[in-house]
Length: 319
Image 1 (tube, helix red, strand yellow):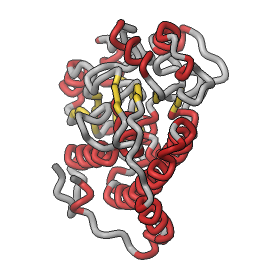
Image 2: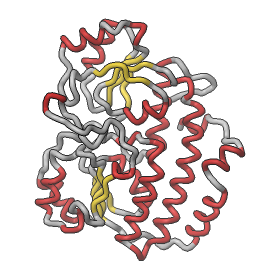
Image 3: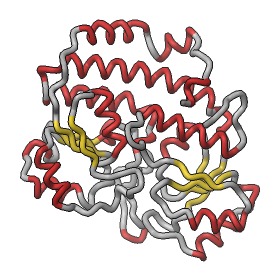
Image 4: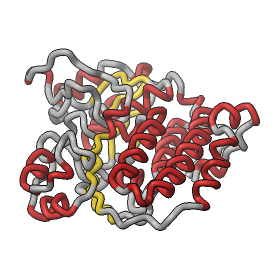
């Protein structure tokens, strides 16, 4: 893991981000924790399964998509409807990311608990300072989300707010196990704050990096780390790359681009075509967690891969 190579946080950093009182509260609360009721939790994307598992480790979690699947486009098949029907809680990104299939699942499940506005429906984006919001959208703009960029799994600085809201929702749904959810939430947020300090320290060489991306998947991550996405392989959001568009990106010039990035669920060929024209490195980054990975491990991998591919790692041996 990336974090094992990092220097321990200084006292000032610890006091700033992880007050000892939080840790003591977590230990105290954990000592009174009861085994969690096995809630049935439906998550639209794997990253929210990882977040739920950190707060409710005994929950039965079902993910509707995988790390190799575009969450914009999912077939509302009977198996998903069945899982939604059984759910006590559904956790999704929101901000219209799942607008093409989630409403159909909610309607056909006949499960009153997971309808919009009910306690069993949780949208992570509601607790994020959204980027790229629009007052007006139309089809000429491509697949634009009026409420902002929905890829909030990389909204690192907002994850503690999502954790706090998720904890409150779990307590509301399953009050008998409130102490365990609260203890796990405190533990998650304390750990995440410490990780932010370490991530920002080790990722400092990435500031000022110019990247050509593929969609706005890493918009929050780039904004946080001071990376500029100077071009997009998509001519417009949701539209497939074309030869003409890639040719126009090549006109940016090699000096204007440091790296070409695409996501694990996307076709690698457009990135390779651009690489042939401007001779810059190409990097595939994960869209989400794999298997039982934690969110911390996901961010570790993304930062480690960026440092390694750009040759900007210093004292840090990356994976």
